[in-house]
Length: 291
Length: 293
Image 1 (cartoon, one colour):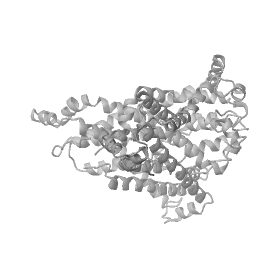
Image 2 (cartoon, each protein chain N blue to C red):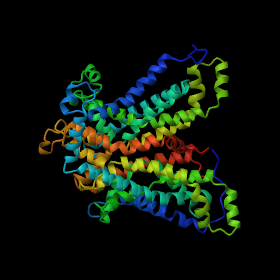
Image 3 (tube, chains in turn red, brown):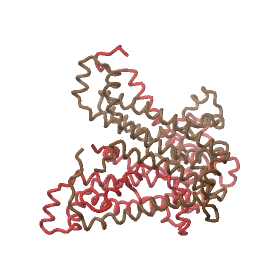
Image 4 (tube, chains in turn red, blue):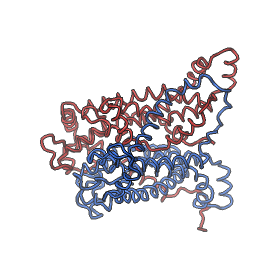
């Protein structure tokens, strides 16, 4: 193309495209929030982007929490337990491992590093059915550890810690500590750990979001409906919406209740997003900057 | 970014530092892989079955369609991802209004919070003309009911749209960050030489973004082959009319849980595993992205 504009003058077409995409990304979220404030009748008859009423919102909440006497709250509790316990294990395991990979030499280090990179790039759904077979063989199906431990295995966290310690740890400091007769454990405790706050936040963010939003693994590994996390619970609600499933029958769930449930299910991740934008950008970039 | 600091001599403590991680890696990375391979090559009695399970899977009437569905979905998803993510990042980068750029990036990123089942729930409503915020659009396109919207021919595009909606924002942020690493002098020089926005993008910015684009495509491809939650929930929402056994992962799941045939399920899993593993390994070794020193 030979026609060239001389200078970067603000381009109205560009602005239109940018705004159009903003609408594409945000409109469904706005609709979701508003849908939770309506009755099913209002959902169909009123303008899609109108506010219903606080009364309807309260009624939806009562109906939702009334579903199987508070199933949604149980699901949320399950999600929280799985996500946080797994997160705690991930941190205890990934931070020392990343530290050792970054600052020490040991047999198998390179193999471990490459294995970590490869597993990290594999989508986590790949291993779900094989994991089921394994966990079934050791009779752990239905135990909460059947999801917590696989969640806790988080190679991306190890990679982030490895990159971080490799870049942030002053080597002279470690040498000086060694000269002073500091053991490797003491060096990690007194020098590595105090510096680790940013990487703990970063790994914590990504691990939490990944755990909270996982669907396939708990769907397969947790057979009992009172054990499932909220993501899988949403699917259960969906099965009882008459408009989607005409055979729903007595347990019928109204669509605004499903909208509210979806909203409730994402609130924790949304909060984490709002408060950790910085980490997020840094982490997304760390996922591949190392040159 | 700085490279990893030179390491100490052989460490005695290192094994203790990595022990926990290695246990998890073996238990939830290596063992399931080996176990799946074992199942894939044996029959229900545990005797060696050669490629029998793979042949059974391939002969199943749902197998080839599932591969086809995912292939079609990947084409839509990857094409849309590359064109729109790169395009939007370039436009954002040229935007002079500072605050607006930040806000837009955040808005694009926001649906990422709905990853997983939540995004599908939202889209079930968005795609239902009766309640959709874009019902007028759906009706203008000739769709009066949810059933018409989720016609089989539309599914690849719809799943791609859902994936794009939740996943693109993060990549736009990444690309934008990468564009910021290009020095202003280079862009200024290009401008003085008479390069317009299009020329600058094509000759300077996109070539410099290339490795990021490759990274994105690789991850999106690997993730895309694993399609599960979208068709699974859609099939629930349409009482099995659309989306049932749509993807290889669903098929593997159904073999294991509906047909009680874990060997064939494992064969499909192994195939998916090989795809994921090969893609990841080639990328790690060849891209130079992760120099494992």
